[in-house]
Image (cartoon, rainbow, N blue to C red; front, top):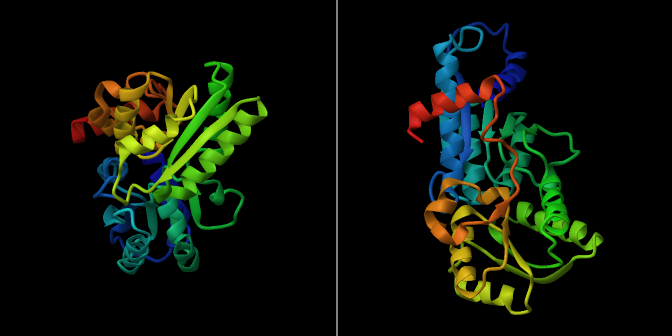
Length: 295
């Protein structure tokens, strides 16, 4: 995150080098800080805090300290748009966020119109691929994630039929994930048995969703949702069967284990980082983050 922030800031500083003054350089963060998606959002925000504190302790950027402005999108497109406009009006020259694909897509026209660089740590929707805009992301596309997992499901785990459960509240991510998985799985000879959608913003009936996904006898279930809903769906699935459950990178936060307990033991996920990374920056960042936030 530290390197990501410096890269983003330098892009904008090119246009500000000769403006004079040493006032703080304002960095915006936008993500879900309350509600079901708050684990993703608070992790992202705290990563930015850790990076800013580290950069400031080293003298800032070109002698300018960094100041963090935050906005809680609450998982709402309308709130995300209002929040980003407010960040820009308050002087944020770079925005880190949003943390889900749908919230990032909801504000894309705003940052493009205002010509404000937005760097998303986690938005991976295919809709952001191959377009000329002000949004930079640092993860592979949803297509890469889902295709990779589909290949493993068929070739390594020998699964030949699978049902899907996915969340429409982040449909720019989940719909493309399911579509790409089905294409790769089907190309190998696998069958998609059932596809069940829901919205985590509505009243949830986890038992009924799990029952519908299992009724035609798939060999496995793929859950494409946030960590909390994935955990609670796994609880219901495990009441009925021990078939393999696969999940997406979106669900890989501490809340998956906290909420799911033993029911998520053995769940297989595709993700885009290594906790055993030994590159120069990561161990230092991990150590400082743990010291700062005690997790």
